[in-house]
Length: 260
Image (cartoon, rainbow, N blue to C red; front, side):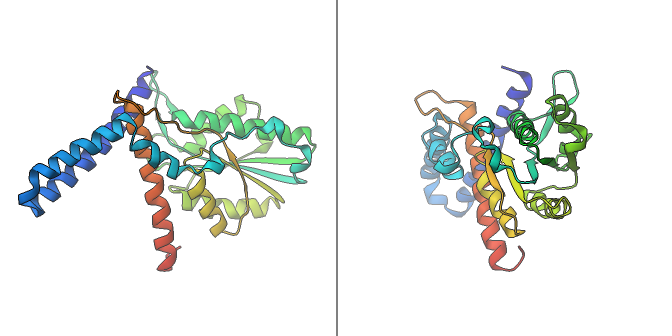
């Protein structure tokens, strides 16, 4: 396994383990007579997550059936591209590669490939095309997500004139907020939104909030392998799904109280 991939899996393992640990401690303090029950339930929950039986429904909730098929740009009719088309690619994090350089996280490579393919298809249609890469530096690394991804997009064939970087967003909500004026400035009449399946529902909510109606372009889909053997990949998938589901709940709560 790639060293950076191992690092991701261990991080997800730790996040879920820490969350369960604090939950168990809180219940121990509040419910002294039920400590054995709490410990048993925690072990069962962790086991179900690791073996995939609980991770699977969580991931299915995070990525609805309508988003479980990766987008095929080759099957997109040329008429689907407007006179001025914007292809928004959302960031998905960065990490340190084996050589010490900053690289995209695993899921982002599929986003880069899809954004570049859509841009190429758009140019075949003879349209004015822009690839807007949105991603700041929420992890406080040496560079923003957008600046890290840009060379890979250029290498994938996106012309420099087509590439627009938005490198200040720290959340999906900020992605949508900061991209909206760029889309309007480009006078785009067609908008594609490129991100992973698990991220698409929350991203669509935020983009609709800023009065944009993008066509969802799913770059990759998360899968869970349920069985007897515990898998770190199942823990990683569960952590990602929980993050997205909490983010969606947060969106509705914030909108209800007037923050969004």
